[in-house]
Image (cartoon, rainbow, N blue to C red; front, side, top):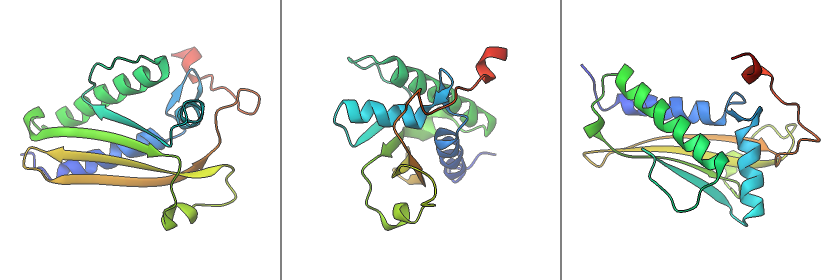
Length: 154
């Protein structure tokens, strides 16, 4: 029988996948592309809410990531047999302008500035389940990055 406490594990799974190097768009790491997206639009953070709500602005990168994680959320809930009605809101927020002490302690040998990725699930009782992951990244650059060939063989 499903329990609401399993939503903490789902938050961890979504967040871990989100910051993973395997989270790519067109063969390049999504986090680096989101950082470039934020820089170009003078944003300090990017927030996704699930299930995906129709937005007025459409950006292929944002839409691709949002739809991928909407499906991942649905799949994780189904695998744990958690009713959709238990989940009020799910969000992933990546903050590129974090000054958290924990963010500053991330391996300084990795290039780029630190970021904080927060995945938060609010259940129908108003309880919060969250996961925080810190990392470092540079803005996306095709001159500096190697493109993944994984999608070419799918």
